[in-house]
Length: 199
Image (cartoon, rainbow, N blue to C red):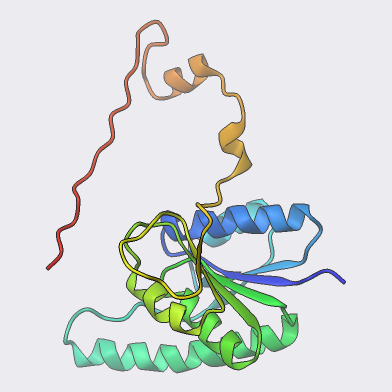
């Protein structure tokens, strides 16, 4: 019997694309996959384009302000999202629920845990996000994309799923011209960042 997977991902590309890559690979293996995304998430367009099934839930991130109206709205959507997620789980009957970070993961991992469904969380970052720290308390497995500087219970270092398209050969000339660059000149890509300091 094929195992059925449900994946919560979206909000940002860093949270969505690891789940997207995982879902595509599972489907390639002939396994039923369903995504959960937030209502009106642009990620739904990508899922539609690749004919991946999904359901939307009405949820929002935890307000970082003291605005009482936003907090009331959050708790209303929180309760609603748990009910919506429970309905989706009862209909789809997954064997495994996977969250790939961001607040959208919490309703799935929390509800699936209390419904007796196996749960897993994935974090692509060297520093765990708030949502995944909370989800990890209800997860049977915590998959780490990078080594982290703190002990994480039930964790395994897995790296981060990436799309197979990254291995495809590209037309360098067409790519550079599309970016307004000359294919006759050497091109350098420079990336960087700032290491976050602990408070």
